[in-house]
Amino acid sequence: MTETVELSIVMPVYNEGLNIEKTLQSLKASVPVPHEVIIVYDRDEDSTLPVVRPLMPSYEGLRLVRNSVTPGPSGALRTGFLHAKASRVLVVMADLCDDFSQIPLLLSIVPARADIACPSRYCEGGVQQLAPSLKVWAPKFAGRLLRWVTGIPTYDPTNSFKLYSAAVLRSLTLRSTISFSVTLEIIAKAHCLGCRIVEVPTVWADRQHGKSNFHLRRSLVAYFPWFCVALLRGRLLRVPQAWLRWLFARQESGRGEASRHASGQR
Image (cartoon, rainbow, N blue to C red; front, side, top):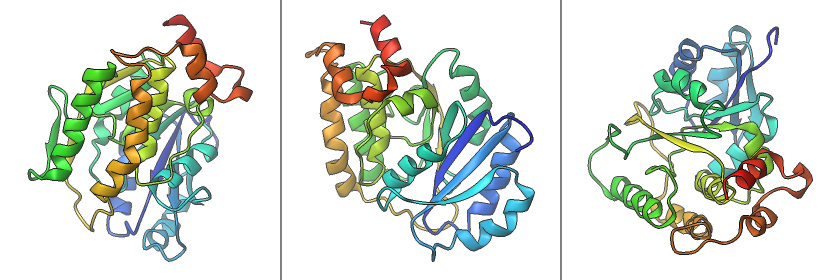
């Protein structure tokens, strides 16, 4: 790229051929800084790929990367993080559910005010434009419960649409392999290490085309271990952060940015 990349956008896809072109057009119009888009896929037969390839010459920094960690969204996100070049990493979906008009706001928050910016469907001012169902109420209840018992400063820790400091991502050991559980894993471990987390309300729209591959029951089981991790730095239990750094921070990172924030916020 002719300019320094200031933002890496990681986008996991699963047969998003009907949505991906409009999603990329919206991203290009919404991101105010030089950036790259890393589209991560599982299979060569994915319907997203033949739509993206002709667009690559006209979208500088657009890359296709095959998932090399484990099939599914968590593996795709972890693969994208490994390939990200910029100091900030934004996770977006390809289904047009996320509000890309908020990207400039998120960029103004990280790193000036936070290590992680969390758009939230469930805080005051947040909206989720879906018919009431268990898929709507379960993550909302879990987010409120987690905030109450741990003090994590977001009501929507499982929403994948987030902006991260790349240094924080590099400082964490990530293990998730199922569904989007890596999102909660990052938030839980970052909370344990004392990272700065800021929440902003967002409007989350239903997908325009295709069918979601999200499975609620399987996801809840995958999220549970990271819910328990967050409890280690909760209101009822406060494990020393030196222990938590030993458990969750990459030892080769030299304590890294996350650890420095943790040391200053005991």
